[in-house]
Length: 295
Length: 266
Image (cartoon, rainbow over all chains, first blue to last red; front, side):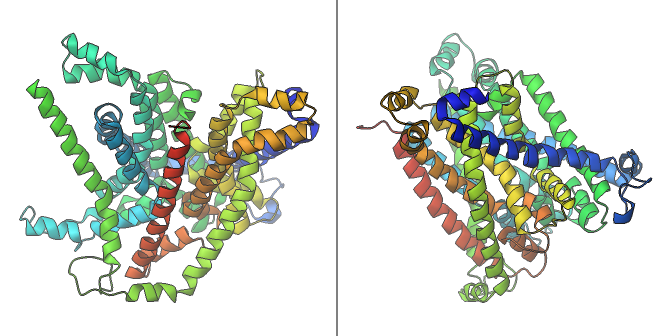
């Protein structure tokens, strides 16, 4: 590997490339993750006890999670809600991506893409905060619905999971739209026309032509959205209530309220396993590889 | 055919609704800045005021947090740009059986939740007695922002014509000169765009920073804590200014990028 680099750039640059890359991948990407996993299998000890007889591998931290019904329930709620967010986002994004890629004129598409990108550049916290104002108990949305006579009493959006779901779909929608758009865009329009000429209806054309072609985009969008939703802290912290806690909030509490980092590491590792599991499942279902995702 | 028409109109209607959905919350948040009400809202409208900008200006905590965010972003740029460029050079030069593995490793921070990156950084540095603060925030953010830089530099590097490099070497340039005079100028636009994206990624980061920031405060952490405790429309004023800043940056960036994508002479 080094020989190829040296042949192209000379030994000084080749060494710098390997050095910089090595430090990043070893000291920043790999070792911290391994250390976190190692931490999760050790008991929480006083500094003096570290390295002593009590310092050995144990499954205690995981047993705590499986014995704590509340935490376990929050773990599964995070899983299901993230799946729900992913599916909702996919449904909302698909027509938009299709419109941008195949229906809109080039000018319209360029304008829409620019309009789409702008909120995407705005901070996640601010996008969530915007919904916090909109969904407030005596906020604009309730006022509007009351004045239209659609509801009789204001709704508490933020006391259940509804506010969190709405906020997440809004916050992560563009991570779905862009992969979908890129995938659908590369589909030859003649294929759609051919399907129509041969008598396929709109639904059938999408189901048999567009969606199969867009598979890598759908997979990428779903993986990114799920990962962001399951790992989100800002949205549930701002739009949720104590009754609708997210798994990340439990992890945070182990670190900064409970002071038990080993326990927190075990919970964090469970979250990581959840995301990796979802990713592998989607990659297998859609038969795509890592290279397709990076596009 | 008329069913098709109807469907097309339905789609267009949907797009319209979508863009309202996209912009309405941000517009309402911005509008609430100007309402003379202690709690940020637009109903009821108690009269128009600019006083929340004054409050924001007088808020020392906000300025300290802004300073921290800029410092962190600067640190991240200094580390993530070299790392990203080095990874892109590595991936486009080396052909080996280990390459898919290295590639997967390089991409892995993008597929890891931000909170996990923060947690693992915090735990890793504990053994060296480094606790949460701006330094760890820089390290934690660099871990995944480098991968974004890599993707952007790599996209341009793949279009590089390597015969140019060989020509420089044949004409007597040293490998360093060829790198410095041929490859680096070619990569410059990609490096600049990557720097803009890396800056914003760092400036806006919340999930990773939350775990490694310690007793320091970055601007996003500050905004989140303000929303939970001590929310006034001064937060909206800050939000409005940040949105204006990002929108201007986004428009400049996007128009510049489009111009580059267009073939020359057209």
